[in-house]
Length: 171
Image (cartoon, rainbow, N blue to C red; front, side):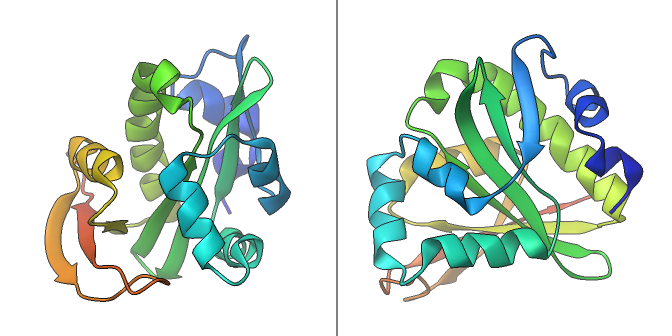
């Protein structure tokens, strides 16, 4: 991993977080227990046999962070690196992410660009359950384009959409 991606204060500044109130920390699946999850996320993670194990495996394959504001975990996220140039984003927001939505969105947009640049990714994809309307709206606002429909893709056989964002010098 690059020096910037492991230097949490520098990364926080690079993505525009308020260093007085906001803190990026290395992701650990136990942090999910400290979060108040949305009903959708709570139901999803209960459908997995070992959601902490899944998140641990995700975080071992690429950069992963937790974002705390005033000591409260607001979101956990990362990018799984599949192979040279290609990764997949994942996100677990807290129930209260809407209270900090502007900071979250602005910083996430910057984080995609910084992480893609540091990891030399030209493509980052994301899968979103068709029933998770909030996630669907957000991923589109984050400049990801829908690429396809994944029938019975989820751990509970729900349908998903796959989105991708292509990075280049102008992204």
